[in-house]
Image 1 (tube, rainbow, N blue to C red):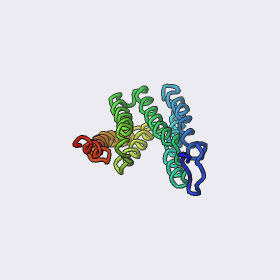
Image 2: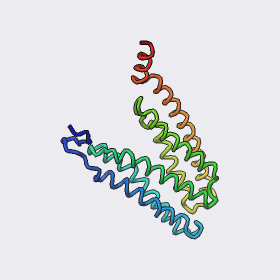
Image 3: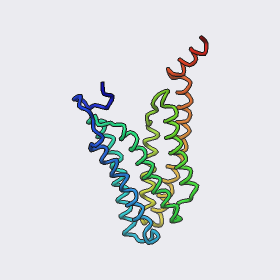
Length: 205
C-alpha cells in the first residue's frame, strides 16, 4: 500500500501542486528582494519601495500556501520541508540585508536567526515524541516580524521611523519569549510522550 499523501478523494497528492508552487515562488523571490534592497546602497527610495513590495508578496505567499495545502488536502513531504526553509530564507535575507546597510544592529539579526534556526532544529529533534504545532504566540511573532521588517524597508523618517523601531523591539522581545516557551514545551514533551513512557517501562522491566 502506498504511503504517499492523498487528498480527500483518495487521489495521490503530487508535489507539483499550487501550494508548493507558491512555496517555490517565495524562495525565488528572496534573491530578487535582496538585489532590490542592496542596490545603490539602499538609498534609492524607489528601489526600497520595490523591495518592500516583493517582501510583502513573498510574505503573502507564506500565508496562502499553507491555507491552500490544508484546505485542499495538498500537504506533501516536499511542502513540509520547503515551507519553513522558504520562511527562514525570507526573514533571514531581510534582516541580514538591513544589517549590511547599517540600519539594523547585527545583534538583532543574529538573535532572531539563532532563535529561528534553533527552534526548527529542536522541532526535528523531538519529532519522535510528537509534533509541536505553532501556537498563537508564534503566529503573532511572525506577524510582528513581518510588520517590523516592512517598516524598516520603507524610506521612513522622523516619527514613523520611531514607530518602526518600536515595532522591531516588540518583535524581538516576542521572538525571545516564544523561543523560551517552545524550549519548555519540548522538554515537557520529551518526558511526557508515549515514547518516553515506553522507555521508562522498558527500564523497569
